[in-house]
Length: 197
Image 1 (cartoon, rainbow, N blue to C red):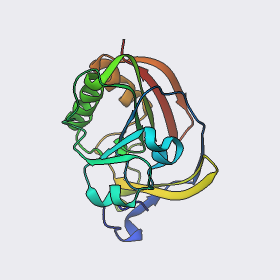
Image 2: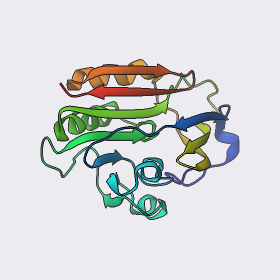
Image 3: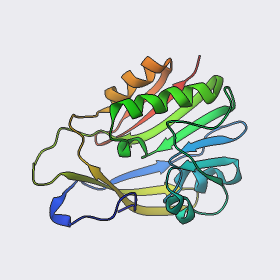
Image 4: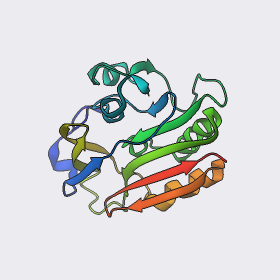
């Protein structure tokens, strides 16, 4: 399980079935802002020195592979100028943001730093309502094919008080001004491609 939090007792885990993701290369002019780019640093593995990986935790960035420029930064308060990036990404990062107000702030900030026509690519989990009150942590095991590598990992987090399906993130994105260009719901996981008009 990724070290976003100290690993709690497994009897608290609600373990989903393993999901497989093939992360295909994508066009991205200029630098890519990768939100929550520490840990496995999947976008950094794919795009290397084109990536500026930010994470609120220094240790997460230290774990990530070499290549990206790594900066400790809070995604709710990005330190970049308006209209800086053509592309932003979030790979299984938003699931760790507990408060809806913080989620909204991140969407607003990413929107601000993207140029007109810029895209925000999101891979994340469709989180259902909690299914067992004793198992208050959901864990999603993943097998990720990226570049020429295969990464096996798991991401876990405390269950939020409400379900958070793809539609939850679509609504937040639209409230921030994004256009939804692509929605790919794959059951337990999803992909969104958003654009700043």
